[in-house]
Length: 213
Image (cartoon, rainbow, N blue to C red):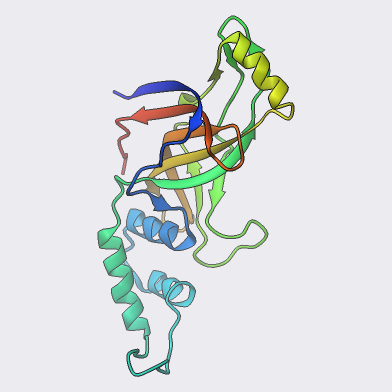
């Protein structure tokens, strides 16, 4: 059974994200994807990893370095896959707008993530081998931005654009070979009033997230 715990906080300095969280980088996303799909033939994935993340070098830079070959890339990728821990979340930052205040529920209409939310590990304007897209499977668990009426009125005056900023934590759940896509579960969302992510408004935290793969 999964429980959703929502903790409202007075605007304050933010607590750090999980100490062992992975940065949502292109390399980390590719390692997670490769580990999830468990490919029978690793050669194509080693080739992408070698060209994108561990380029071959035929000449030594100095007496302490050595040439890097595709065989080295295979060893590096195997080591990274074995050490990658799906219990530790990825972190990514984004922003969203909140809607009108619901006086009956004492909260703003707010969907920090939805079924349409996704993150790309590469640039938005191009796609390269090794780019991975992340989509989320448990977005319905996160909704509303609770605040008492007086605080909500002040907040709207201070934030006429209704923009808020978020740090997301999520864990990979499953992937299908050839899709270049990871299905993930959100485990935590910190909502901030400022783009520097220092004035914490609210924290969503979902515990006991189980992988299906």
